[in-house]
Image (cartoon, rainbow, N blue to C red; front, side, top):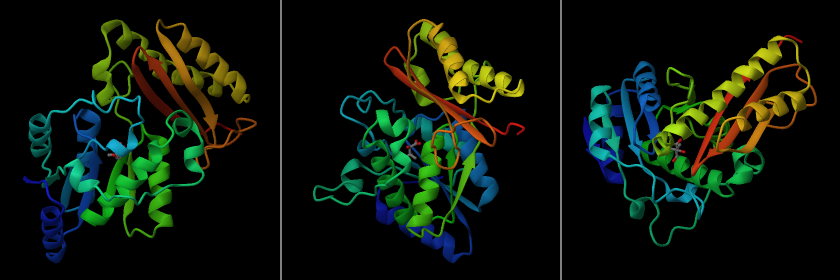
Length: 283
Ligand code: PAF
């Protein structure tokens, strides 16, 4: 596996792969790999001849009071995990390279960030769209794989790729969960034992939503209220949002009749966790 820290280095490597008629898949990450990241790399290997993983904790997507400084980093461990997955190249740029002093060009979407995480994390999706657009320009991959735990991010990147005419196929990979249902996240490492137990409230509330929808529940308000009740019965939980909504637009739905996204964000101690599930209820 090759490791590059410069934009010119990764560009040259990708261009020579493409000149040899090899397809390239990019897996953008912020590092500190868990099984979820590794599943994205495996997906990339299935889809293309070569897999490039970028590791960059993007300051532009963290708000002032967020966990940028505390974000876990272990580059050597990440590199050996990527190597073991058969990744061909890792790209680990510095902040100065990605955002030089004179940097002033951002990518901002007008509607998707007006929902869900965009409301409690102002500026977050502007930072995500900007760094992903830059990575797309730098790596010029044929495909790029993102996890579905960040459903809103995946939707936003698909929209951006289409709006800005990136000739890149965006693939979404399923959420990877711990055995007890907790969605994998680098932020799970912040949780104490008690908080880890309370963190199960997210996936349990989605199980409850599934049961209610199976029983024919049509009222999204009732669904959200019951989910909130379940979450708050776990110690130390604070709900950011629990939203049944349209999976394409993220707009509120009046009744549960077609495909439904149920997305939620919950704070447990100092950790903010997200999860979601898509339902296809019978009409
Ligand atoms: O999902 C992430 O890890 C990040 O938001 C991403 C897509 C790598 C952009 O920094």
